[in-house]
Image 1 (cartoon, one colour):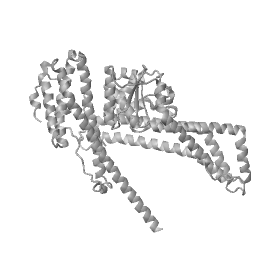
Image 2 (spheres, each protein chain N blue to C red; image 1 turned 180 degrees about the vertical axis):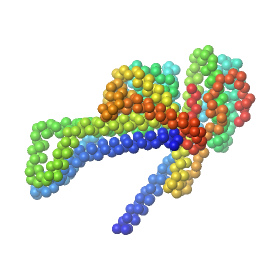
Image 3 (cartoon, rainbow over the protein chains, first blue to last red; image 1 turned 135 degrees about the vertical axis):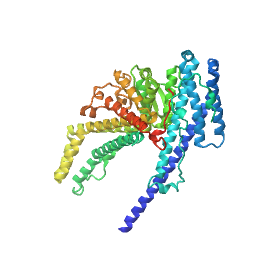
Image 4 (cartoon, helix red, strand yellow; image 1 turned 90 degrees about the horizontal axis):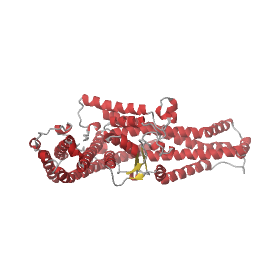
Length: 197
Length: 353
């Protein structure tokens, strides 16, 4: 009888172990996948910008500064991500770009005549969507990463964490205070205060 | 407690409640099938040698087989039938800015929910509505009406698509297909049962076995079982509707999680509610997949026990107030200055509007 109970306990413990281990591995893969999603969207945004600048350049001759800020931030982000950048570095570079794009969008919004141009309206939707895609991808990454971090720290899963090679992953934090605020329309805004990375 | 904890706790509570309902449904189905076999076994186990003994549970097996067959058929043909019945057309390339926006919004919600991007269909109907269908998340379909595109702004459209994405992620299409097939199986078998009873063949058979060794326990069980069959079509339908309403709340909470903007869905629901004309092109059979009851039934708009048992969707007022409560929690959390780090809800999203 005692042997039977012991055997059942061992079976229960082993199946829990397998379950907890697999749950951690699955979450780890989900985190990696979510990060890849962000990467895809960031790349999309980087590819979109030259087209965007080309389209509005003529109509926005008077807003050179805003456009230049976008181009500068884009090139900076690309060069940073080409190296072995950390999550925080990528996040900082991309938030610069988000800020610059947000201001561009706000400027477009402020000129009804500019908005009326078919191309620009279409571009505005593309830009809005790209920005949303990035923030949704970031949200998914942060949600999954938090779940992963919580799970591996929680009792009793924390005993399996070492075995599953699980270590806390870095969240994509919004570091730039300027990005937290909604972009304001300020036509005198110069790109100089944004060029610091 | 933070807002996100509430949001995810809300989802968990909904999941738990619908899980119990589904378990109850399956237990009831098993009682109707294998329960009958068990009673017959009890009634015939002391039968004399050479007389019939009910040893193989053929009744339950047949019911399971019929249920499985109907589910398989519904699963194979369901999506295409629904789309054909509504006259929906696939939207592959956008022709108008509104269609472009719709495709973009679906892309965004697919990213937010982490499921593959579903196909998008348009229904030519002026009444605002939307539904999700498809065999699995890999081949899911979201259909929206022209009316929805007309009345919703970008954020509201995003919230509605988020709700449908929630249905897809929670496998609600499969769950409701399964339940509908089981309800159908029970209706079918109970119909055949009724005919057998009326023709008297079954009773004489049961009477013979009862005549020999009719213990009171077997008689009581048999009476309960027959009564269950009498009420089965009604009970199973009500259980399925109960599950449907729980899944609606869950999908609302999922939408709030994806968009981090519960008020947008509340606004969209208010707008849809105001245009309460029935969606004529969406038939009753797929009502439980829509964002709002397409039949415009009065029960969906009322509260109280009648609406609580008969509607596919919870009352709009309840859904809207739950969404407002989620938004309120978020504001309270922001005001309390909770550190955004390490908190699920805080992965703050800045949507460009």
